[in-house]
Image 1 (cartoon, rainbow, N blue to C red):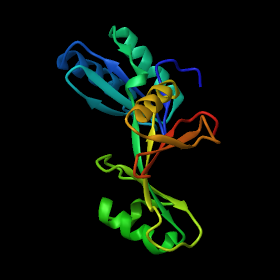
Image 2 (cartoon, rainbow, N blue to C red):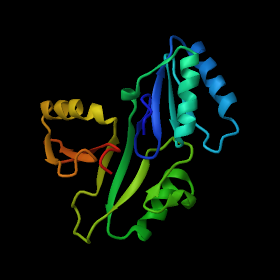
Image 3 (cartoon, helix red, strand yellow):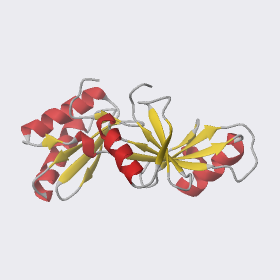
Amino acid sequence: MVLADWRKLAQALQTRFVTASLAEGARFVQAVGEACSSDESVPELRLGGTFVDVSVRDEGVAQQISTIAADHGLTADPTAVAQLEIALDTDDLPAIGPFWAAVLTGTTDSFKGNDIFDPTGRVANLWFQGTSPHATPRQRFHLDLWLPAEVIPARIEAGLAAGGKVVYDDEAPAFIVLADPQGNKVCLCTSEGR
């Protein structure tokens, strides 16, 4: 991918465009809506007081949105994006997947493959990591925090300074596992090396 304004996180390309005001952001959102209304890959936009966060799955649409942003005089800050996923370890996905889909999204239709995606974006994605059978209370949940690759070193440094430690980095830069002082884990994930 050669899109300087964007970063690939878990499922999509994402960026933040910086705006001077809510009104400026609203004008940009309207322009994107008018330009991308017939595309199969409709972007998701979140308007804030001084930013517009954008998520797309198609590189062509991302490039089109970057062009619209440039026409509006906006700059991108792709290092400001992040995506949080919750991971649940299980050795029996069919037994628990439908339950979590129903509870989190109101329907088992949101359970596809190893993932539960809330189509409204209100609930963090839940994905299931396969494990061998094990006795409880082995860790079951952990967080996956998707970040732009250039942000990862500073996050690791901050985590270490706050008492954490790196517990696994054999698959870096795809992901690096940190643990808090009690052993609770978080994977810092990027699209690189996958």
